[in-house]
Image 1 (cartoon, helix red, strand yellow):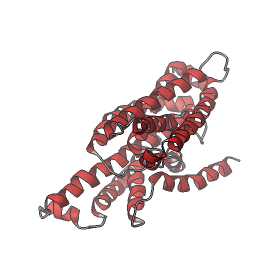
Image 2 (spheres, one colour):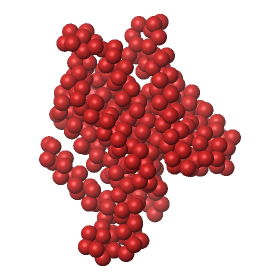
Image 3 (spheres, helix red, strand yellow):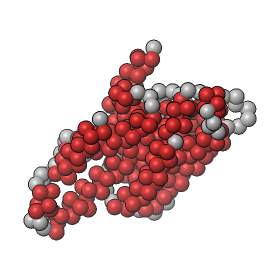
Image 4 (tube, helix red, strand yellow):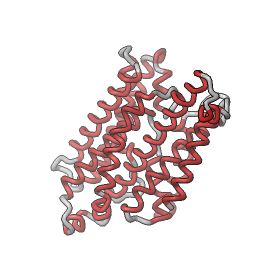
Amino acid sequence: MVIALLMLNAVVFVSYLSLGYQNDLLLKVLTGNADKIERSIVIDTRLPRFLTAVLVGASLSASGCAMQALFRNPLAEPYILGVASGASVGAAIATVLGFGTIQNKLILAFVSALLTSYLVYEIGTTSRFRDQTYAILLAGIAIASFFSGLTSLIIYFFAQSMHKVVFWIMGSFSNPQWSEVYFALPITIAGIAYLLINSWNLNALLLGDEHAMAVGVDVNRFRKYLIAVIAVLTSSAVAVSGVIGFVGIIIPHTMRMLVGEEHQKLLPLTILFAMLFMPLIDLVAKTATTGELPVGAITAMLGGPFFVYILWRKV
């Protein structure tokens, strides 16, 4: 399975850098026959866009896999913590205040997403809630709804400067920047490394808090760290790509049906599959029409039926 996924990743990588309005650019670059503009298209446009898609796919799918173990719910996915909605508010505010450069938008989206996740955690873990796991889940849904409405109001009142934010909210890897890759890369590596190291603890958590405590897991501390890591991974993904939903459901469940629930296998295979899935979806988005489709719209169209399928299987 690992070898097959690595081979497919290689095929997608070559296809992604090759396909476009000029399909021979990669060959020209490799053979040294490309001019400065052609080399820039491959190195400064296609390659950072590919790497951004890989990082976002890996972050969202790994976060979704961890969240499904944390909440013991197959329908849990990263955006229900309200992180995406919080990041959208940050990006919209950056644009409204007139300093919507890519760096400022990344920073504000990331910070607002982290603050949102902290707010959700503080509300969900207050002593008045007996089942704090589901309280966090419900608090995330409530906060996400509030911030989505707030973003809509910002767009309504500042419509003249909001077209870029609207497209960003729909999810896209357009206008790629190496700064986005440099921003997301260390966060993604650190977050995924933490999840992989603690994959055995995810197995224990999936079987219930009592079982996890019986085998030596400090459930409260691990849950706090896990939510923080998921929030950081999701925040970085949303900051560089906008809102791309359902990836955290589609990828983990596809691999779960193939390899089972053991996270030592499930988590790395989920990441490898996401690393080819996300660039493949983006390749469809940028080549299917003369313009460019929002990636988030495509994943939503795939995720809706997949979501219904999961519900149907669980009934």
